[in-house]
Image (spheres, rainbow, N blue to C red):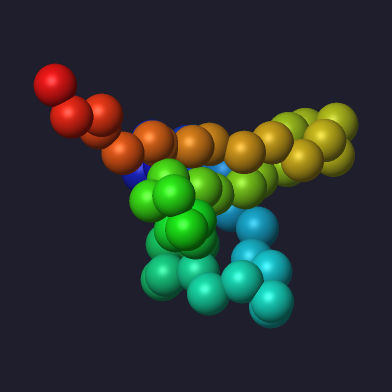
Length: 54
């Protein structure tokens, strides 16, 4: 996210979701998700899933 933001990308905020200061929402499964729009206006998401136990 830092690299995208450093290149001018901005992340979407949704009033109905509890997002942190960076715009990340943590899902009930523990996945961390952020959204942004591409140059054509398509909404994209970045997801970081929690590590699975070995």
